[in-house]
Structures are given as structure tokens and as C-alpha cells.
Image (tube, rainbow, N blue to C red; front, side, top):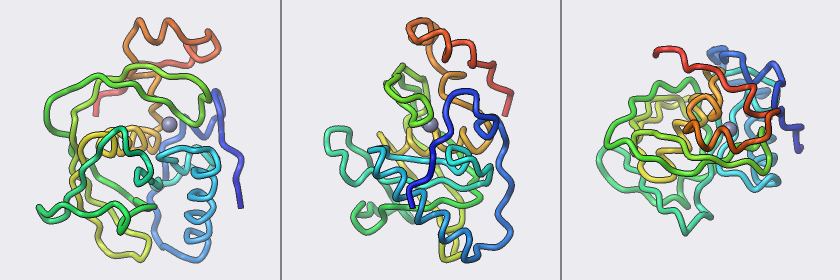
Length: 185
Ligand code: ZN
């Protein structure tokens, strides 16, 4: 089922997600619906906050985006996206690393808007997979950026908060006024 995507000042977008204690049938259904919603909206990532459910959960799918390369490694070995995507990430802990780069980002909660965001180019992730097994990987490129963008959603942080001031100033005032300082991590 395609879910409604929370936009702009929707309170769920500013709510830190609860840890998922049990991956039950309701979570399986939520993940299936989030993947369907993300694909229908042609997104590469969607956080539970964005469907009005503040939980420590996001989904990703970068398998179709050829023009912005991504790399993913598990236990030091490169993996094929086709085997991994769509990917549900539950209760993640992340460690961003590498050089800090600016790149253009969009967000399904702010349709049609884009702006440059500075982020480290890679990230290490420790989380649970949808089957409850441990999920550990490293991601670089577009996937590394998407993981950090979605992880921010789980903390109630929006990409507007990290956007370069000139790019933020180019957005409609309705979006600009929602930007907040990022709390220290
Ligand atoms: Zn977003």
C-alpha cells in the first residue's frame, strides 16, 4: 500500500524515532509499504518519520541510479546492489568517515527542492536487517550520502538543517523557515 508522505512542518519529521524492540508482522508490512511508497515517488531512500511513524527504520534502493555511483562493502568485500536492494535498515548506529564533500540532495518530504549538503563521503553502518540478523556494511558515494540523510531523519534532523546557506536562501520561504541548527551529536 502506498502511504502518504509527511511534508514540511509535519510533526513526525521532527520526532526522534523509537527503537524497534520486536520485528513483528506490523514492521514487515510497514517496510513493504515504505518500499512501495519510495518507488512510487521515485526516491532512493525513505525514513519511517516520512510516513508519519517515528521509528528507527529506513529503507534504501540505489540499484537503479547508474549516473551517481555507489559502493557497498560487507566485511571488506564489495557486494552487488541487485542482491541487497531494496534494503531495510533497523535501529542503525552509523560512523561517517572520509573526506567531506558537498553534493546536491533532495528529500521526498520537500518535493521538487534541492540544495548542496556537506557530508563525509563514506559511512559505516551497524544495524538489524528485516529478518532480525545483524547488518553491518560500509557505503560510499550516493549510497553513503543516502544513509546519512536517512539516519538524520531518524533523529528528527532535516537536510535543510545542513544545507549550505546560499542554497537554503534559494528555497521557498516555507522551507527556509523550517531549518534549525543541528544539535551536537
Ligand atoms: Zn529526506
